[in-house]
Image (cartoon, rainbow over all chains, first blue to last red; front, side, top):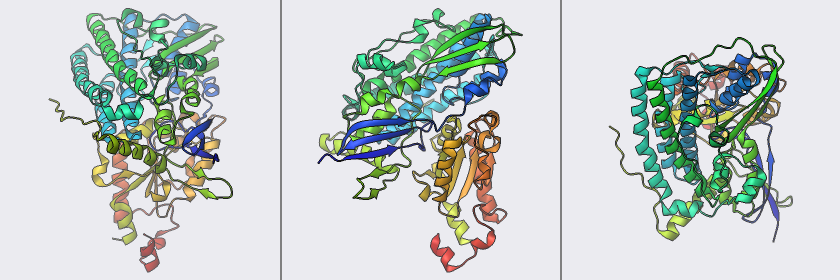
Length: 409
Length: 163
């Protein structure tokens, strides 16, 4: 019996980010087709941007996404600087990179927690978010706000990092090493997590390239792209870091790439802090006008390359502003990864690209017209996912990741 | 204390309704539940369905597509419920209110009991708002705005039975 049923997922979800709507077409347990519907989060930002001055535009693009609230402004100010050929002091570049990398750590910890939640390990969720608070503390110390930092401006940054704060920041960063190692050991080496995530949702290198996948999604498939290295910007040409890649492109590899990237980020921030401690100077070139012209800016956001295009006609407002966010490229790869998977795996696969995707809330399983409609509530997909974990626990006798007692000084 | 109010405020089941938000308020709401702030100590938990909810946390502006869904959802909420607008967006629409896709302020079609301004409000601010609303309800200074007036909280067997 091959009756095709449709499982709508979304558009709202209590945990994740932008509302998106997925329609899973399933035959039995297998997912055979996927429709993606967007538009619940359309706020007309590009048009709004044309009505704002260049300085105001930065605050607007900051609110495209609360998690990428450095990536978008950074790409945008680079586009404005490219259009107007505005110089940027070196110290500002280091501050930009440091804040950007802090954002990457908090975003990856956030994803790790949610991924743990989706496969039924709420402990990972709570632990990851607990250590994410430490990153937010550092960001609050540097920028004055936990999110929406308001740091970037065309020509530099708005706030300097005080030299007196640097030892404290550095110490806080070091204290992050241990928790991340803990996650690496507890999560990546756990056989039960292997069973749930290995060989699931595979995106091959060719398909990653065909779909134009970006960021960790592409790098997990062995597609070695990273704008930080390929098109140097901010302070990245002056810093030493590795680009993490994996080969298989399954959910497990995507997690590994993200966890290892956090170590690289800490390395980058430490180098930035060393430079900031040594050198002084202005952090802002105070541009007064943006001459006519057009410019592009990009930045490797936690999810992949974010791209901004700005055209100026010499007035104080952009006459065209185009934004391309990484999820725009990554979400379609779900079609490749989810097809052929089971419904129980769909949750983690859809979440694995770290999209602005939402899942639990209101989903309905329509079981044919003559059978009537059966409404599954929110938790059912989660339940299916957790049940699979429980089943695996029973079959293999494994207990799942145990987080040892970890005391911070 | 009124039995309905007692039952409503004892352990708040929170449903989180994000409009076309930038997700920051949504993440701060979750932050309030995770170990640093740990609201779950007080029995405040997130629920997956609006039908189980005592409190709706509304965040973000609602665009034309999302507003329709929000109105549909709100009809499913069991009364009495509370609505908290989290962040500057439900209050004023912030910088998005001039957008072509801006619907109207959510307070036009939702009975929002309290606003928590901030972009995003800190978890401390969210906690403080919840405490103020609960205290207001218990002292009788506040009546859930989804009800017509305080008479709907009258101690009738039917009212007690619906709790």
